[in-house]
Structures are given as C-alpha cells and as structure tokens.
Image (cartoon, rainbow, N blue to C red; front, top):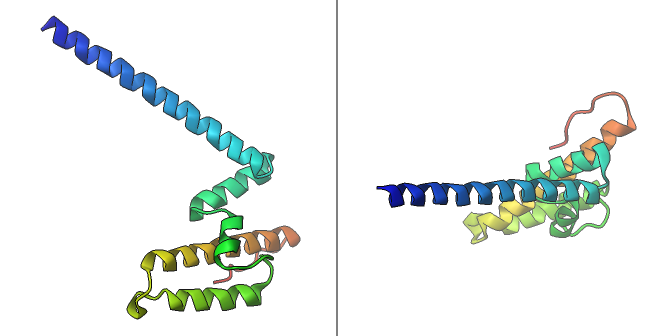
Length: 127
C-alpha cells in the first residue's frame, strides 16, 4: 500500500511541476507577443485581436492578397472571389473558406479600430 501511495504522490508532483512550467511558458510567450506587436496598450490590443480571429493582420493580408489594409475595394473583390471559389457546393474547401472569412474579419477589425482612433464618434462596424 505504501509504495502505491508514494507512486501516486510522485506522479502528482511531476504533473504539478509540468503544469506550472507550461503556465509560465505561456505567460512569457504572451508577453513577448505583446512586445513584438508594439508593446503597451496598443500591443496588448493587437494581440487580443489576433487571438479573437486566430490570425495576425499580416496573415490576413496575405490570404486576401492585399498589401494595404485600407484598400477596401480590392479587399472586397478578393474576398468575394475567394469565398465563392472555395464554396463547398462548388467542390471547394470549407477550411479555406473559413480562413478567407477570418482574414476579412481581421482586416475589418483593423479598419474599425483605425476609424475609431481617427474620430471620437463611434462608427458602425462594416460587414
């Protein structure tokens, strides 16, 4: 009975240390991501936006094949084309279609944020 108890306690300690190490690593990684994103509140906001959509602004621009996130006409044209091409009914990929949708969503978040910082009046989100 005693060796079994020692085995259980030893296993619990190992799992506890591994969990603590993983939490510390995650915390350190999120701080580094915030610093790379510009640091301070702006960096924290950018990391929060990235985590909401699951992609960075750079990745969203690559998916929609745009260089300037303020070129709304090109973004809309590329979004519609890529979304239709990847329609599951037309033999497309739901995964790719969702990536296109998330890319558009991420760029829209950036546009909305820049519009809000440009004026004090709240603007309606673009869809």
